[in-house]
Amino acid sequence: MASTRSGLAFIIIIVLANLASAQTPQQQIAARAGLEQQLNAQVPLDAVFRDEHGKAVKLGSFFGRKPVILALAYYECPNLCTLVLNGVLQTAQDLKFDAGRDYEIVVVSFDSRERPALAAAKKQIYIKRYGRAGTAGGWHFLTGNDVQIARLAQSIGYRFAYDSQTRQFAHPSAIMVLTPAGKVSRYFPGIEYPPREVRLALIEASNNRVGSLADQLFLLCFHYNPSTGQYGLLITRVMQFAGIGTAALLGLFVLTQLRRDPNAAARQLPHPPARAASGLTRA
Image (cartoon, rainbow, N blue to C red; front, side, top):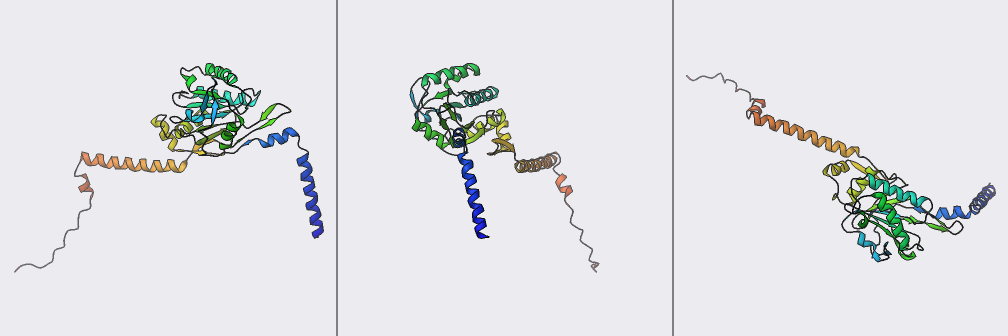
């Protein structure tokens, strides 16, 4: 019996090994790409890139005062990266916040062969399509070397791999919202980013420095779900607010009644029972 089980285990190992070896090179490369959410991770603010003018800039120069939408994409990508950037554009157009005034958008190419001229051309396309004044100073397209790109990608759990046969990269599709201090606040996987969700993420990442009071109160009743990248109604918090609101309304009603009739409270209190006669009389 023991020898039979050992034989079956050996056969299973051989089958699994054959399946692994049967993967095409493209499948093996694709398996190396992925996204591991690392909330609250710190991006390397001292990492040096080139802006669209070819000037060396530290990543930290885009942080400090505003939340940041970060996207990793290479500019000559024929498919997915364009969809990611188009998704950022669509969301930015739907937001009432203005890029450059209320938040920053930073796009970093993870292809170290790309140069600032290509980044500048890509920027002109998206700035023109966005169509809001003052955006040129708030939407940045960067290039860099392998070391700096790797530092940034690893800090946010972003894995990509180059396929020399197709001359393309295998990579995930996602954007991140970061705090002004450069910490990862939210991930939005995919190629479409719901404006309401991104708006809430920017408000939260900014420590409530952007958005209206209504936005901030709304955010108190919602909770971020990392697995979906969306905000869901936090029913316990809603119930707490409802209970507090009910108590406040009752207190206000009682106070109003007392102000109208100061003796109302006294009339509502039970009177002490009358003392019973002793039955004794003076002679």
